[in-house]
Image (cartoon, rainbow, N blue to C red; front, side, top):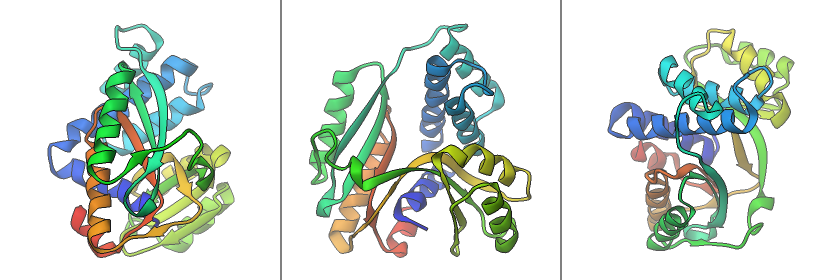
Length: 248
């Protein structure tokens, strides 16, 4: 799997094993609320909300929590109003990074992101400095032992997927942005155990990191993921599987 998608599944593994579970739940619920606020609470008319709910369900967020998050977004329940911000920058070794933020306090968010980057030998860049290096895609990852790869390949491609790749840890499905819903629906109708389902920013190329630089990069990813205001972090690192697995 790619560095980013493997990191995304590692986050879910960590959440299942330690105190990060509550933090991951909070981020998933916040995205549902923001999606409902921006596009309304009807999932048939709001693609972003459909994606947010799918991600929350794949993260095992209880249905009651999801329903309340939608109601907060539509104003039927009281809740915070979040501002969306996208920061671009660089990590150790010149790794390109995109950091999605949902916050009710812009000053707090930028200070926290800048501090995390600086502490781990990264920096915030100008708007547009790395966005060109990423493509918006749908990303679905399923466990390899839950479905035959050939069966999943045929179903996903027929539904509109552009690539299906397998490794020892999972099967990764990439879709065009506009085909994510149809592919996810098709996969959900199979026996596949979905580990991850999200709209993602997939890097066009990667930066290989090893040794200390790789360790610093993983510490930076952890530090950013720990921030309440940070929703998602995309980066074009290529780190050996042994280090990524150790991080899990």
